[in-house]
Length: 77
Image (tube, rainbow, N blue to C red):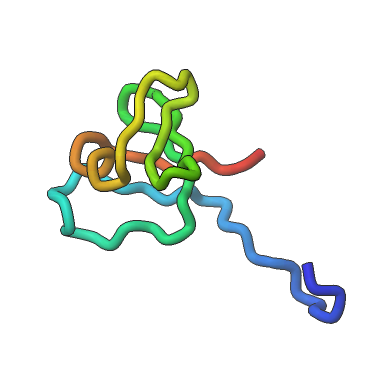
């Protein structure tokens, strides 16, 4: 937080949701959100540009996730 800014950063209390859609139908998020899919797997963006499941067994691009699963943003606690 900027010490000269008297307004704290705004954090949404409502997670974003992405419903299954064909590739390229909506813009990809630019902030790399952590998301959970319809199978209750949590996906985190990796340094390689792909998303990785927390168990380390699965990886996919944002386009692959978005075209296969409904996704909900996992908000930091």
